[in-house]
Length: 209
Image 1 (tube, one colour):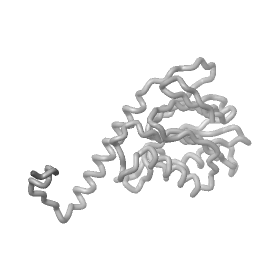
Image 2: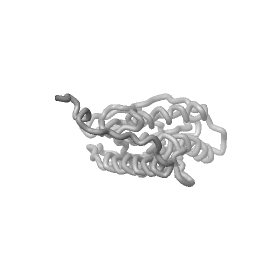
Image 3: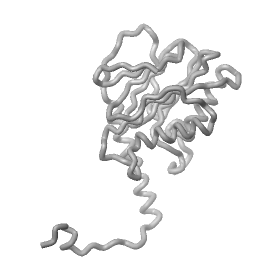
Image 4: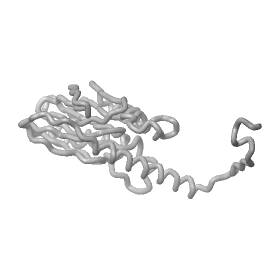
C-alpha cells in the first residue's frame, strides 16, 4: 500500500509555462492580496477621545500637512510610513500596500508601492517647507494576519516592511522607530504637531512611537 496518495497516481509536470500564464497568475495573486488587505482595514479599533482634527489616509494614498492635526489610517499587512520634518513641524503619511512597482502593468500609483512611495512622500513633505529638510521616518504595520497568504514563501507583510526599509536607506532617510509584524491590525494616528505616532490595537492596547 502506498503511503503517499501521489504514489498511486500518474503525475505530469509541464516543462514550460507561457509568459501570458505567468503574468495572469501574478495579476491574480496581486488581486487576492489587495482583497485581503481591504478586509484587514475593516477591523474596528477602540476609539480614544481626542479634540484634535483627524484626516483620513486611504489605501495607496498619501497626505501631507503642516497644521497641528492627526493623519490616520488602518493597516494590516500594509505599512504606514510617517515622515516628519521636526524643524518645520510638517510631515506626511503614506499607506503602502505592496513591496515594489516592477510588477505594475502600467503607470503605478506611487503610494501603492514601497519603492515609489518613499521618494514621493519625501518630495511632497519637503515642498511644504521649501527646503531640503532632514526627514525622519517611523513605520507601523506589516502584520501576518492571514498566515496562509504569503509571497514567495515570505508573508507579504514582512516583505512590505523590508521593502520600505530598503527604500528609506536608498533615499538616505533615517528610520527612528517602528512597530511591525505580529498577527494583528493597527490603527495609526500621526500627530503633525509633535511627530508622535499613536498605535491602537484591536484589543485596546495603545503604543506610542
